Amino acid sequence: MKLRAGILGKEGRLGTALCRDLRTSCDVIPLGRAEIDLSEPAKVAESLKGLGCDVFINTAAATDVDWCEQNPEPAWAINAASPAEIAQWTAQQQIRFIQLSTDYVFNGRHNRPYREEDVTDPLNVYGRTKRCGELDSLAANPKTLVLRVSWIFGPDKPSFLEKILNRARNASRVEAVSNKYSTPTYTRDLARWLKHLLEKDSICGVLHVCNSGACSWREWGQVAIDAAKRAGTRFQTDFVNPIPLESLTTFVADRPRYTALDTAKFQELTGVRPRPWEEAVQEYVREHYRGA
Ligand SMILES: NC(=O)c1ccc[n+]([C@@H]2O[C@H](COP(=O)([O-])OP(=O)(O)OC[C@H]3O[C@@H](n4cnc5c(N)ncnc54)[C@H](OP(=O)(O)O)[C@@H]3O)[C@@H](O)[C@H]2O)c1
Image 1 (tube, rainbow, N blue to C red):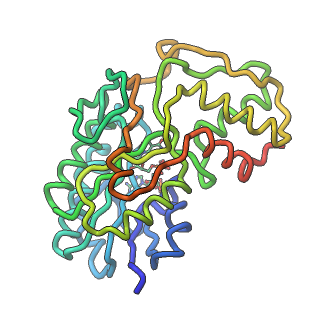
Image 2 (cartoon, rainbow, N blue to C red):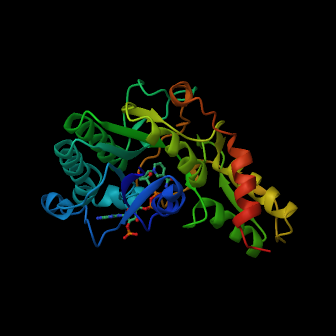
């Protein structure tokens, strides 16, 4: 019998990918803002009534870091209070809750990839609300699995990658931050990893999942441009100039500098070894970027 998976965030970058790619192993119930509005925590339980599923995956969130900084109350409702409501409901149903979270729960002052047990210390409202969502979900349902991911990209919604590729096609100079590091995570890889996690109902708590390695935004953009060039895309410039994070004066919220995630626990639990981020970016650009 296939698992019935409720997936919230069906129009998001990750949610769309999961709703499509998990169909081979699950009966997917795609859910969006129209079905469950996370900005109203008091109404979440009512919206969930009658939803028959074996696992609930919440990919929905307020993900605009600067919007969260300027709108802390709705950000808290969406990223913390409502996920806690979903966790309580899943506990009543005695089903598993998978809550997506972020590398931004860390302050970024490490010089090695963060492990699950490392102390959290978010620098901004987005990170604080997501951390609160983690803690409240874990407390409400012992069958909660918090999946921390970083720098998501994929074919379903543009990310930093499309921005830099399109800019390099249309402008003679492009630049990206070279002193902020994490790991790009390909949505289609994440969907594959999630299938393994869905098979092992006993895995709960906090888990880091992303491709392997670490890079700056500049390196991420450069690898994407190099791959697109090999695939035939013509650029006005094919070099990404390095700039420091401090030069981006339009950012409202403080950002952590180094938030690569260590996936050793995930590898140990599933036997799956995430491929390097460069390979995932190259495949994505080859198969999905239509800039030529
Ligand atoms: N993007 C990244 O680089 C990144 C990095 C680390 C962690 N994460 C985490 O990974 C998860 C998925 O991220 P993503 O990149 O797929 O995000 P995304 O593309 O911004 O999608 C977020 C989804 O949340 C939905 N949403 C926002 N407010 C809502 C509300 N009030 N009620 C119901 N739904 C609402 C959006 O719906 P609408 O389409 O209707 O707006 C959208 O479908 C999130 O938990 C995020 O915190 C993301």
